[in-house]
Image 1 (tube, rainbow, N blue to C red):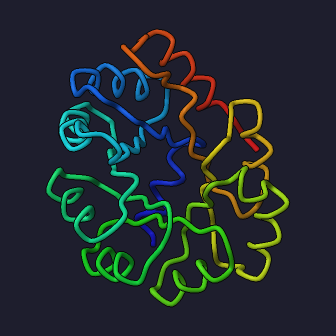
Image 2 (image 1 turned 30 degrees about the vertical axis):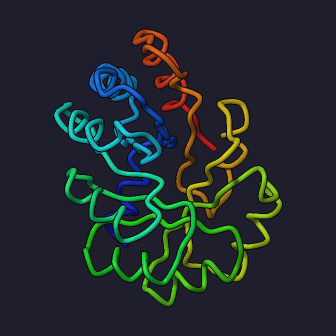
Image 3 (image 1 turned 45 degrees about the horizontal axis):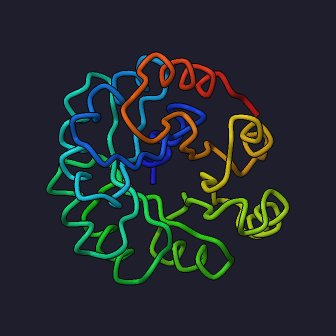
Length: 204
């Protein structure tokens, strides 16, 4: 828990990255780190994801993890790529037990009290709230978090530069996840760095 807590506190925003071309990995990572966002979640949604993780790990200052980890097989692939943390959209006993046994910092997705209770049973207290806006937004997270005083969250899904401060203002929120800093396609390095700097300056 301490390790994932430290990762979540490095910056107010964790970029959630869907990258189709591994050649884009290093320029994107360099721009994000230069802008003040060192924690990078590379989603396992593309064929290039494993190569992207390996490439981004070479960027000084980058803390690179795998997102969209769905099962123990994905966990194994993430570990083999050198991921420093993993993020999942939900939480199953099989994935939770495998992740805890591996010792890797783990941020499981939750959207209701039962998900959180499963995580707590596994010894986890840090969670992703996903999909944040579609699951009811700030009001939903306030209500869900209320019975779980030790739990802290990284809301992800539908959050923007404009709405992130509202989430970050919640006591239960340590950071948010978002994809708005990195548009699809060939990277506009200057634009990504500027967006990262703006995101890094957010406070609740």
